[in-house]
Image (cartoon, rainbow, N blue to C red; front, side, top):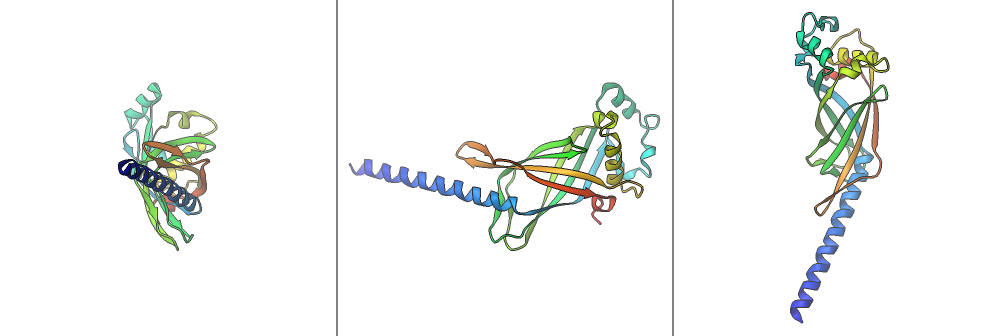
Length: 206
């Protein structure tokens, strides 16, 4: 009888602890939704393996000078990669945190990048701030050839390269936190959406 009572007590404790853990995650995820997100800089920007920061003008990026671009247009595969540094500031009086999140980055209403951050992100309350680098990898072929996105993408690459002649680029970031429930992952309902106008100075971290 004592053993049965012991296991019932332990089970009740584990259940209560699990519920408490889930409630804490939900509270921290909600606080994350109230945080301010700001892209502060970008680095490691490569288009078909070409470091765009080393280009004086985007016009220098032509298939005659870079044969990998010509190959990319023929195979419809022009990889672009970059790392965006996002600062998260927590104005609330509660700790904001999440163990995993999914993100999407939109340009001209078209999805530019998507991916996951598989690490704990925690932002202290009362104005605490943390920086989260996210890696971006995509095929730029459609963005460079589609009439709906070509100009916007060209300006984005110009801004990333530090060009002073580019128009500001507007990026939309959609973030979906993921909650851990035992061995299961549960997506937080809806997305945290951030719209930000990007200039060459922001991408250069100035």
